[in-house]
Length: 315
Image (cartoon, rainbow, N blue to C red):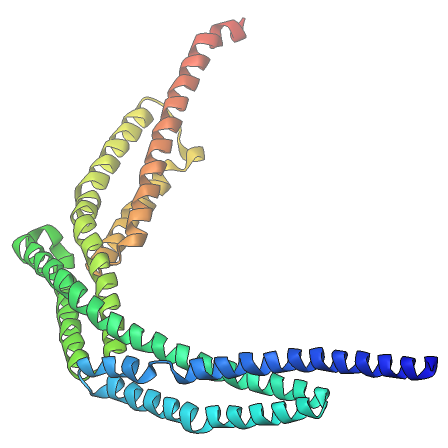
């Protein structure tokens, strides 16, 4: 009797355990089924249709066809495959082929993840193109206004830019062509390329504005300020030499010659609007000249010290 009761209890335990195991696996099937339905109900075609508001040519047309084809593959190939695997998984669970069911679950999850990633990529690219067009239309107006002002400044104050004027005008012409390139790419439906052009225009305009602001100052430094300071320094050195000062050990005169030779090089850089090296070089020259004056002051103080203490040392 006890044996029969034990067998019955074991059967009941196995039945209950099997029930809960199956329930767990069926819950996973339900989850995957719901995921599949969610993927299938995504409004991808509506999202893809948004791009039709743009010029359907070039990149816009190519992407439209690519996205539509990708969605068709998901709906007609990938999701039907998932449906078949769900039936196989359900059958495997009913027959307690749980290892096989787990393998199918992994297969389904990977496929749904792949499909979802494709959809997310489509939506992301659609938004990128539409936002690019919106940003382009807004920013290009601002850039065109800035471009007009820059052009007017160069034309109205051409004399201020001296040797750099032809190069600046060449840069302006190049920027003008980029605006035309932007219009052509937009009309051709190449909105991402147009976006790159807008960003390039902004960078070049910022650089051009910086050159226009700094070049007159740098020209004045090279043609007037630095030469005048060098002349003053030479006069001081000459006067001190006549008063018996000795400068060979300081190398000031050689450095002044080097600076004089560097000015034409900097003017060549300015002519090519390559102003970064010029700004840095002129700052270094100014620091050197301050150092020269400090050395001259030290020489004066040294001579004064010697003259004051010579009698004491002589005694």
